[in-house]
Image (cartoon, rainbow, N blue to C red; front, side, top):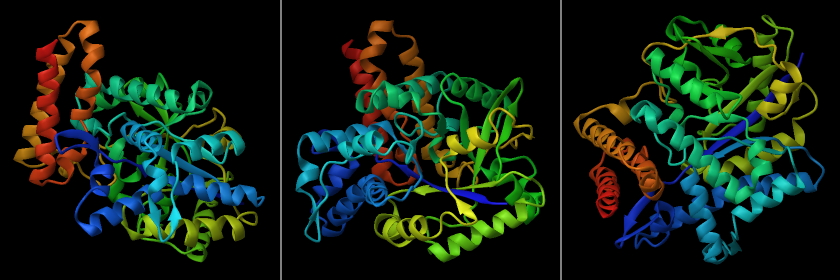
Length: 407
C-alpha cells in the first residue's frame, strides 16, 4: 500500500482605504513608515510568487512536484495591478528582485501543466456562514470571472475544487444544502475541516485519520457533494513547520492506519495560509517542499493533485457518506472569530442590510455596484477584532451605499 501527499496553500490580502484611496493591504504595508511592516510586505509578495518559482525550479530539473493553490480574486487583481505598474519588479529581498507574480503562474500553467491545481474560492474572501445566502453565488461567480480574465477559459475549466474562506461551514442543514447546491453548479468537490463532522469529539485517533485519508459524499437534505478533509494540525502542522523526514514519517503512519480500513491508497492534504508567519514566508519551500519532492517521492509516498487522485482511484465510486454537525465549523473549529461579540454582530447586520438594498436594484444598477457589495463582505474586517479593521469594513459599506445613491 502507498500514500499520496499534496500540500495546499491559501492566499489572501484584503483591500483597505489608504491615503483616501482603495489599495491592497499588501501595497499599504509596502508604503508603511514602519520598517518591520514594509519588510513583511516584501516577504509576503515573495511568498505569493514562491509556488510558481519553486515548482519551476523542480520541473526544470526533471522532478514532478504537486501543489494545491487558491487565491482570493481581490488578491489576484491586486497582484496583477502591482505587476502592470512594474512595482513587483522593483521589490528586492537581499539583492534578489521578486519580479512579476501573475506571469510566473501563467508560465507554470503553460509549461508545466498538472504541477499546480488551482482551486476556486470566494471573490473577496467572505465568511460564508456570516454572508447572506443570496450573495453566495455572486461571490463564487465573480471569482470565476476574475480567474478567467487573468488565466483564460481553458484554465478555468480545470478548476474542479472549492475552498471555503477560513473553511467556514454553515451549521444549519438547510443552509448547508443550499451551499452544496450552489457549489455543484461549478465544482466537483470541496475541502472541509475534519472538526466539522458529526460526533467529531467522540472519534478516536485512528478513526479521524481514516476519515481524512479518503473522500466522502457530504450530505445535507437532498443535496450531496464530494468532500475531502484537511489533515488536522495535530497530525501534520504545515503552518508551524515540518521537516521532510517528519513529514515522510507521518505519511507512512497515515498509510499504516488507513490500510486497516481500505485497500485504496491514502490521501493526505495539508492546508495552511501560504504567506502568514516565518515558516510560510521563508522556510516552507526551501526547507520542506524542495527536499521532499526531490528525495521522498517515489518509494512508498507519491503525489497527485486532489482532482488527479479522485479521478485515478475513485472516479465516481465514492460510497462513504458523511454529515456535518449542527453548529458547523471553521478551520479554527468555531465561528467566534467572525460572528462573536457585539461589533462583529453589528457588522453582520450591516452587511445583510447592504445585501437587501442591492437585491432591490435594477439589473443595470446591480452590475455597476456588485463588486463593492462583495468587497464589503470581506471576512478580514471582522476577524481581527480591532477598531482599524472594523473601521475598514464600515468605510467600504458606506462607499457601497454612496454608489447606490449616485445611481
